[in-house]
Image (cartoon, rainbow, N blue to C red):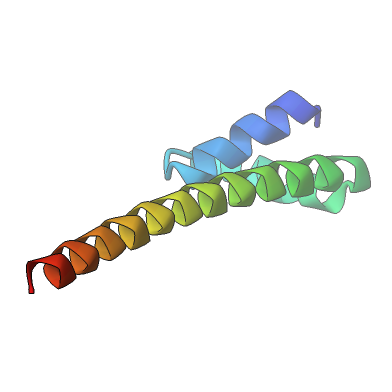
Length: 76
C-alpha cells in the first residue's frame, strides 16, 4: 500500500468514515513493514496535532484564569 493510500485510510478511520473493506485493507497494511511505517508516521503526526491543539487551549484557559484572578485581586 502506498503512503498516500495508508494516510487516507487512517484519516477515514479517525473520522469514523471508514468502510469495512477499507478497514480490512488498513489491517492488511499493518502486516507490511513499509506500510506499517507509513501508518506509524501518520499516527504520530495526528497525535502531535491533537496535543498541540490541546496545549494551546490549556494555555488560553490558564491565561484567562490568571487575568480573572488578577482583576478580582485588584477589585479588593
